[in-house]
Image (cartoon, rainbow, N blue to C red; front, side):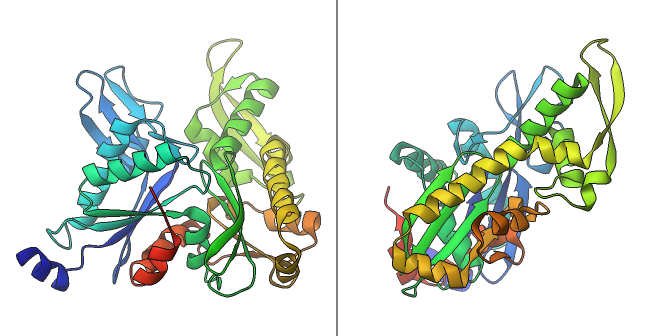
Length: 343
């Protein structure tokens, strides 16, 4: 009775976007209360947690042998169960401590192509981290809701959500996914492509953090102003074995990103080919909505428009669409029951 009384006055629900790159937590009435990198620093001696989130990311590539910096999620799913549980526990407690002592009801977004074993791993990690009840929702559904698309209507809403580990392409109608494709190529693969290009073309070894910085500074999907810009890149010369500085142009970076971007465009084409004719007609009118961090890559909307001849819209605040959509479901239990994924 006491718990029920407290939960009435201090709502304990929250939504979690458990992303490969970042984890976001949304609380009803407060909005996004946590946005941290999905990274954990562990002691190699006893596997105890030293740092989580931004503090752990600062150690990436700089930690001594006594500290292991881990990204427990890969391609949108759990790669390290124990570390994911520790990370979730830390994030849920941090977001929840400010609000109520009651264990929260949690909605977690997951890739649409996740297996039953992977779904159970996410659910058990959240339960062990302190969640009272766990609901799983497909990322494209959450992204579409967060982007304000009318998914409950009898018409097509097409969403392309480009995150850190996966790209989700889906056509949604009447609150259900008509067709979806979960491509395990996304922002992290773009970072890897840049690091690989710098290594092959300049014999320079750079870290994950630096390749991401290059992507944010010079990355593009379509020829434009960034092609003529350059940036200084520091790393280790593979020939001499000493630190070195080179200069990389925007045109180089765009060429380095060509392969992962082509894979995303191909996934969009594949989804359009599998869409029923009546819904395809809706997409001609409504177009495609881009969400996720990858939506912010300059020129991607132009490239997709060129390749599909369809209207392309970048959602407002694409980085938070998924968690905002999942959070909105906390206030709509009937819709949540209809769209949640069985475990």
